[in-house]
Amino acid sequence: MERLVFLFMLLATCHAERQDLSGKVFTFPQQTNTFFVPLVPSENVVLHSITVCLRFFTDISRSQSLFSLASQSSTNGFILYKSQFDVYHINVMHKTADFWGLPDKLSEWISYCGIWESNTGLAQVWVNGKPSSRKLLQRGSSLTPPYSIILGQDQDSYGGGFDAKQSFVGHMKDVHMWDRVLSPHEIQYFAHGSTFSPGNVLSWKNLEYTTRGDVEVEDEQKIPA
Image (tube, rainbow, N blue to C red; front, side):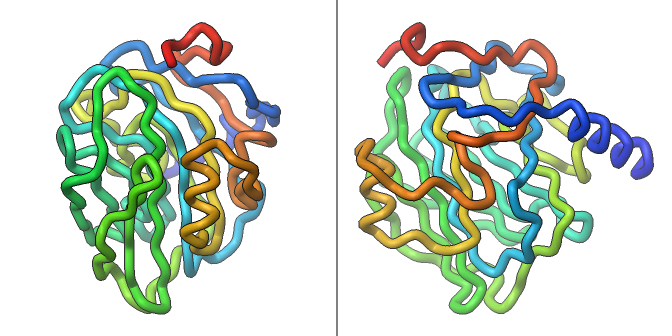
């Protein structure tokens, strides 16, 4: 089974496209375990710190997986997840933290950033430019490539093991990932649409990806503001 998963991911990588997705949106139109977007990192580096930022739009309040990074030693390497309405969730190497009281609205675009640094072990989320408290997760640990990075599903195995009840349904855009912790000012720039340095691991302006199932790449102008 692991060999089949590896061959699947290799095939997906071979057919991935690298594009500037400015002005584009991924649309996940249905609850299913077969719609997702694999991403190929620009740099395969050992991760001692992580920042992932993205924007999403959904009209459902159940649990949903937005961003899932797995390594071969840790299927839950780094996950951004919505546990339920008004609850944001980070999983780092199978240790989790939930964050309450941050902005959350259905059928509106939400800016969501998650950070983690190995040196302190502290994790934090920022939603629409508003920070959560900082919580301890996996101090002194690191993630080693190769990585499987998936939008719209939660990986329970490397590159697979999806559960339709955890799938994301809605729209997603502006996905960036860095191998460092962004400063509060940089996160504010992202949240409010100001100029910022694109992610060095994943950049929406130079993204290598494939779409699986009926995930559509649409013009942002077609999506509600």
